[in-house]
Structures are given as structure tokens and as C-alpha cells.
Image (cartoon, rainbow, N blue to C red; front, top):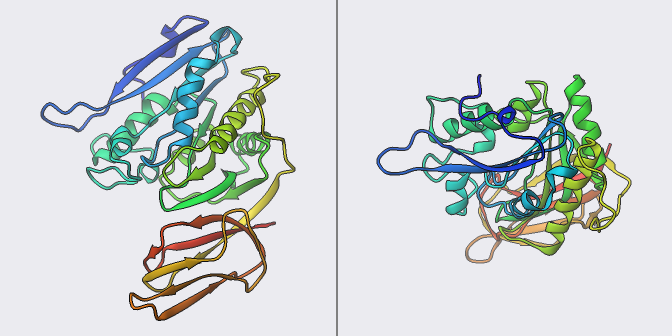
Length: 322
């Protein structure tokens, strides 16, 4: 893969640029572009990518990156910082997780295919133009419209040099929960890791909205991420969230076996005991179909808020310490 449309080496030191790359694959008069910022500091290395909006209904990271692209002074920066507030514009405008043209999940489409579907072409463009060449990637996610999540960070279980750097960066965010994970194929962060780029994925918020708490959490962890890379000095003010003792966790899902109306009895962040009632599902006439109980003790990490549910859909995800 080769960079084709822009090169950060052509940008001056201590500069801020707003650039765009055009997404291929559209016909007629349709034109779709991904805007991004490149901040070059007093030195060109290291290089890091901050990216959000990979799923179109996840907004907390989008808002924070729009702010930080203008807030960070390149004169205070060491290295080159690329900021992509919205990686999937058409899904964003359609307020949906998946791309509205091919229903593809962009974060299951990397490293992409220049001759594939719209989602695969977008993944190829983002990977080739914006991911490759970096030392680190912070891929910022939220939960979608149907659920909410406690703040946590995922990283791939990987003992390569890039994998160890990713694990250290995940702990540097100061969150309560870190989840070493076997990522599914197609994730941007997994594809980056396979190219020697240390990549992590935080999760904050959900419900298809912005919150003050979510904004504060993402702003804090982004500054901590950049301070860990020694790209920025830690700011003296503005980091409201305290550092926490990070718990290394695994997860288990509580899934529905029936379609119907979900009545949920726990919320994100709640502690639960083994056997505790998580929720019930009844049919359209109100007859009880199923009780869902916690398979083990833990903390509710993800809680579904949509009450119409189908078999196989997640009601809750539990974290438990390794």
C-alpha cells in the first residue's frame, strides 16, 4: 500500500491543516469526503492517529475530536497528530451504525478492498491514507443507540512489540476497566496492529447522544494518551476524571433466547451476584417467556435500553476481574 493523496512530510513544522480525502465508489454527482486535521509539532515524530465516527451513531468521540483539533497548539506538540472526527460520514448523516448503502459494518471491513463494496472501499481509503505510517492509533468508540456502557478500553491480546505498547497505552488512560480481547477480524485496530502500529479502542457512553460526562471522560483520556506518548505535556488543568486502579477484566454476555418485550432490572455500572435477575422477556400479550439471570458475579458493563428484543441480542454484558 502506498500513500496517494497527501503526505505529512509536505506540511510545515508547527502547523495545523484541514484536509479531505474523497471516498471512491460513488457514481453520478454524489461526492463523499472525509475531512481530517493534521497537526505537525516542533518535531515530526512520533505519529499518532485519533479517529472517531467509524460507526455512524457514536458521537462522544466525534465531539471531543472536533474540539481538540482546534484546541491543541502545534507549538506545544512533539510529533505529528492526525485527527479524524467522522470516519464514516454517510453512516453519520443516516444516524446508523452501518453504512446505509451496503449495510456494511466499517469496523469489520479493514484493511479494506479498493474494488469491493462501499464499506470496503472506505476502509481501504482510511487505512491506506490515514492509518498506515502512524506509531499509535486511538480508535474512539461509544455504544450505539440501543445500549449504554461504562467507560473502558480494549486492546488485543498480543505479545508483539506493538501489542505490548498498546497494552501500556491502554493502562495509561487511567480508566477503571481494561479488557484484553481477541478482536474479531476486520477491526481497524487489529489491522493496524498487524502492521506494527499500537492501537487501542476505548468505549464511552451510548444511546446515540452526547453527555457532559462522556465528553469529559473522552477529553481526559485523549490528553492522557498523548501525554503517555510524550507528544504533549500533561495539562495542569482540565483533566477532571481521577486516575483509577485499572482492573483487567474478561466478559460474559447475557443474551435473549426469545423475541418480545424486555424488562431490564440492572443498569450499566451495577454490581451483580451470580444468579441475580437481569431481566425478563414477555410476548406481545404479556406472557412471560424467559428470565435472564447473571451467570456469575461481576459488574454490568453494557446495558441494553431498547426494550423490543430479538433472539441472540445482548441484554447485558458483565465484566469480571481476571
